[in-house]
Length: 336
Ligand SMILES: [Cu+2]
Image (cartoon, rainbow, N blue to C red):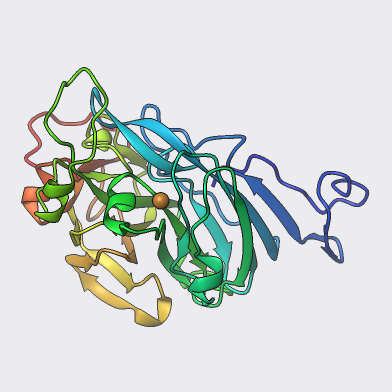
């Protein structure tokens, strides 16, 4: 996770930067991340590689809502509505038991809101709509480990989702994940519905196309085909964990990696839901799951692998990427 401003629990440091800094012995306790002062990199790709959650037990996130022109396919721009200026918005990563504080600031031109699927909290209070120029704060304890969707819930929700208002939140289990991995990636699937128009201008939403579920693009992390040109990179022998969150608004993601089998899938991202030996698992719109596999020498070793939604009409519209194992050259003519 990109952290633009972290308050570390070093004695004598940080007290001036933010109020309410707390310490547990010498351990850092409070972290403040401002998604308004640094954006998630989206060039050449939205950054899919994840960093661990910090050890802070109180994590505060300032999330600005911004109108932004985003690139949804190579050379195709779109007038989106965003959390933090990118689609998807930034990754929020916390640990089970953490107190999560959200400060939402509406710097856009429309009323918006934010809905955390990982929160147990009255929606009437935390997920209410705020007008441009307004802000709001709420907090919740992350009680349920998993991979969750966060999205704008302002009606019509379909419109706010197809405009790009979503981000993933990962809640790591209190005792950590049951298995060790060398690499972690986040993959958020979503759809875009662009009406026909002047291709030189940023795209606009097509409401009727969205109602008819006729997506123009189905994408991973906001842009069609981006990880074909720039594959995710892992080493031979790496155990890899994928956090797959499906923002929809309307399609399932039938997540599959060509050339391997998932050792474990955790529906909802909860280790209590463990499945073993899985080829494809469907992540519903508004859902998430964790997928684990290993790219080991005696099996799925050095080479190139495709990750897709196995609903291939959707993969053909952009929801396909590559994993490059072992630094080999990406083969031409890959059939996915
Ligand atoms: Cu919105």
